[in-house]
Image (cartoon, rainbow, N blue to C red):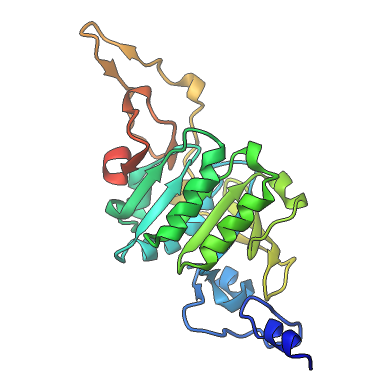
Length: 265
């Protein structure tokens, strides 16, 4: 066989159909915490040092419950969890209930859409992240070059990296090693594996949602209007409640990067 071809086939990121579907190295994947999902994921869990895309048309359908076991595991180490541009401020009591250490979590806000992927890339390259979750704005759906840089940054780290995109992104090219589609109902979360490097695609399964996260969401239009009192101080409506995600109050505006213990209430 040609020496150049042998060199190419020996690369760890090149998979051959004739190769056995077994783990090639310890630590290549982290169990998802869902046995049914691990059975269909290549190497039995979420891929490390690779980009995973989560395609969903709505927020709050169970995606955080899906990732909660991995987040809890990653929060026990010395490195941090990063949420880059989440659509809602994560609800701390729900994360605590899933054993996520809030002191390890940082929420990052990008001022411009173009900066979202750049922030995620720099976080992965820094080596500070045990797990990264980033929500991609619609304006960056076709930016394959930026996605490729993000995949390379993930490949050079030992981190878990999840990128949330809308379902229409399923029709576009992606360098991600794993792509899954989520569809949620009140009681269940349906998953479809759209692509997985080194494994099979097309599997579909359904996971039950935890009772603690099945509380009805509140329409923001029904919440009290936030405004100053007679002293001129801003007051937010009561933030107590069972919802896993909520919109931040204007009075809570903070720095671009904030610790979860300060930003999450």
